[in-house]
Amino acid sequence: MKLGDKEYLQEVLKRSNADQAYRELAKGQFESYTLVLEAVPDKGINENIVLGFDCQDGEFIEVWEGSRPTMFTLTAPYGTWVDILRGKLGATKAITMRKLNVQGPILQLLKGANRVLRWVEILQTIPTEFEGDFAQYNLS
Amino acid sequence: MQAAFFEGAGQIIVKEVPTPQPSESEVLVRVHYCGICGSDLEAYQSGFYEHGMIIGHEFAGEIIALGEAVHGWSVGDKVTAEDSLPCGNCWFCKQGRQVLCRNLSITGVTFNGGMAEYVSLPVDILHRLPENVTTRQAALAEPLAVCLHGIRRSSLKVGDIVLVLGSGTMGLLMLQCAVLAGVRSVFVSEVNPVRASLTRELGAKAVFNPLEDNLVVEINALTDGLGPDVVYVCTSNSSAYQDALNLVRAGGQVFVLGLCVEPVPTDFLSLVMGEIDIQGGYLEHGEIPAALDYIAQKQVRVEPLISREIRLDEVVKYGFKELLKPDTEAIKILVSFEGGTP
Image (cartoon, rainbow over all chains, first blue to last red; front, side, top):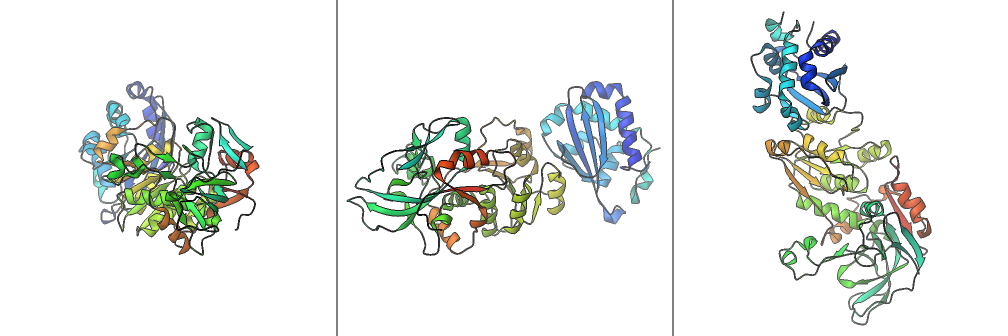
């Protein structure tokens, strides 16, 4: 499934809610996220992809395409997200290096870094097709 | 005369009192218009003004009597007044920071203000109105002066991108001041559609609704992913304060003019990692002449901000209570006194 499409989002929701380790780590957190995958026109990504996730007490209750108000907005070029999903770039390293820009109460995000890292591990298990020049890195 | 007294939280009482007599260095002003300020509203809710004072620090009128030692002023002069009277002698006054004076008197807060038919004032805080500025317009000179003070105190530079959170009276004036100061773009965050529409009319490049729009996504898209250089917080809504830290660009400034009387959870890690400056602005000192000139030159429009005029005896019912409604479309409500000249 293609990174960011409806099928992909539903798979994120299904796998995240099925993962007991993630649910345990995210218990007590009431957060919503917007992920902005920024266009990289010279590598075939012509438009931003904007995705939303609402996670309440460890359970993803809604996922959506497009922009809504959320507690956190995480923004990075499409290629940076690909690097994170491939395991080539760690999420916390990406934040620290400012390759991944976090807007929101970053303290809350970093204090629960383990849940973020576990969530990335879940995303890495999803067979994912990338677009443009990044198609060579598809996850199977 | 009739006057509106602050008697504690939720208690503004209009009552009859003797008309004040000016001392030898004062003048007696017949008030034409007096605005209800956001700080009056906060005091009405929290009770933080001195009890037993006549409120009102946004007013204009005409001189009807002079103290014996007053020179350079005449009966019939149209005037407005500074919102405060610093001592002039303390360390802060001597540093030119009169707003921080250690013996500061504030009009309508620590001494009787202009929400009355008449007010007796020291001439030191008076300003004569330009010919083409009405007393109705001049009632907004004080909030405009506060915004000018804020612009001067903030880190704003020509060519900057600005975000204004909230578009009540202060937000709409700050928007116009930022345009005057030579910014590249002003964006505004506002929930109320009527106010949002007015922000566009007064120069905002874009207006966003924080309940419907992801401000980070929208503003990043318009600022090459950087965010605004300065965010002016012109609301008492506590959620706006964290929004400001989220939205300002790294290395930028959050400038607070709003009076938030609730504790605001603040993520100081964001502040440190983003090297964000936070600064506040309070009152004004010496900015009234510029404010009056901007109104006279029509470089700042105050008339669109005036939602309605009410009588003094309506000040609670149609003034304070209206402005405290969460869905109010009113911006500035002026108490009009008999004899006011529009």
